[in-house]
Length: 451
Image 1 (spheres, rainbow, N blue to C red):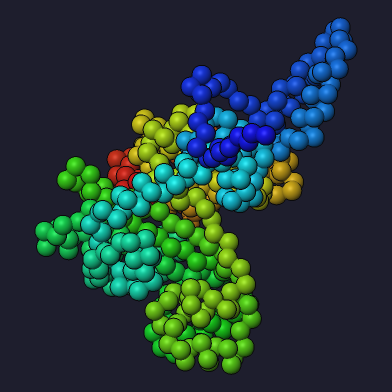
Image 2 (image 1 turned 135 degrees about the vertical axis):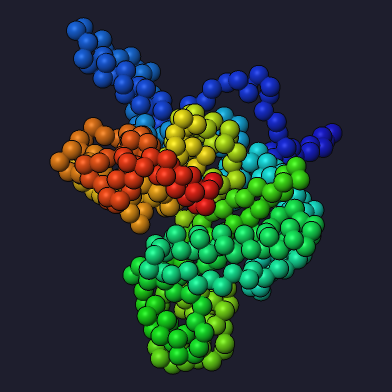
């Protein structure tokens, strides 16, 4: 009796055939919407035609396994996955299966594993070969680089970090601080004629009840901070600025990340002990989650949008259909959406990238959403991030407005302000009577916050 040795094939190494590259793949949700539309057309027709068995079974099947029920949601899911440069089949499969973890995705689609490793290897290889300047004396930030095999040169910024908090929203404050710190380190590098490929600076603040908490300077101040934050849900905002050398010139990039922290209730004994360790004094808010302070943290929710900052303008426009608007729900919360706006070259806001939060309630679409600019913008209808416009008022809102319509109207509003409800009348007056001065301030804000 003969035996045949069989070698198990590694599914992660399988390649899609070339003729499959041009094949279009639909989501189950897209098939369902198409069939549903055809059914509705048939029902409205003068002569109703009884659907055949295959049509009925397919409609029932796709309705049962459909993950998304709206065109806007499907478009957002497709846009998000397409920017990952996945194969069309992989895009459809991920959207149909909705795996909850990367491990589950790799198990369902083995072809993803090798691609992820290639991307990570390429990124790490680039960083490890680069001459990195870290504009921070924070040992934690230094460890982040050392953990991926990078030993940056540390140059401390001389910026005093004393901006007046009353003049800025928390997001503007931390963004400005990190920009000033980075600018100072950048100038130090140039003056010293120091070799560098990447310069990185960052600043972090804790925000509770719109108050900014930075690093406490005394044990008493640390205890006051911790008592205030004890048992609360608050935000931690980090702004990162880096200069990247391209063709002997540096280009500046920046982004922010916001995390929602739920802290457990700390007793006076907990606070006294924690302060006695000395850990709170070099940390915003008087605590850190990486070491001892982590035992007092119940949960951390990270707002994961930063990957968009590393897309080229061509990749971004391709991912959003060329209209300069990217829209998607934030995580699994269908009431909170993120819009990313890239105005056209004809706009006075061209060159800027604006991140906008759109929040809807259970009453949507019969109640208007609320809109907050995460990216600071110089505009008469925006004050501390909050957008005020007629089309968002109950008086003028119509239930036919989709969230994409809202994003489109926000984009239009940038160059065509709503003077009926100006939030900042002085900017509205400037727009009408001193347009050149107004436009220069717009450019200054874009260069500082939105480029």
